[in-house]
Length: 178
Image (cartoon, rainbow, N blue to C red; front, side, top):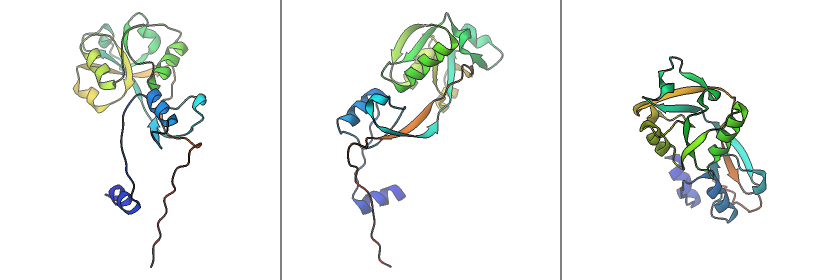
């Protein structure tokens, strides 16, 4: 592939890590990473963040949940007041977006479970442990969940390319002779 060839020509080593945004950002501050793709960092980090992709969020319920009986496949989060949620861990970048959505909808919810992985959340929801707001993933279509578009409140979920400008990152250049 082109990336493999570029790595060979420029003698670049790539390593890939997954974790929640908070820990990734903390590790970048410690110099462990040169570049991250994650949720937008807070101002306290003083990192440069460029949006690279928007992500659609959906509400999911188990097939047997009372909300699953709705004919309309979109929902206002205010309709979910009183139901228990399975949520992302507080260190996850998506959690702050979810909390802001609840604030805009003027509701508080019972958090039944918290975890870091979106597929674990979907599995818990499929088994009746609560409802959840998650990024849309193709795997949801194969799970025993009902999927609702979120019509209100408005939200924006973007992925960012993040780097620390206070450290020097090597610049790539190639010399070619024709």
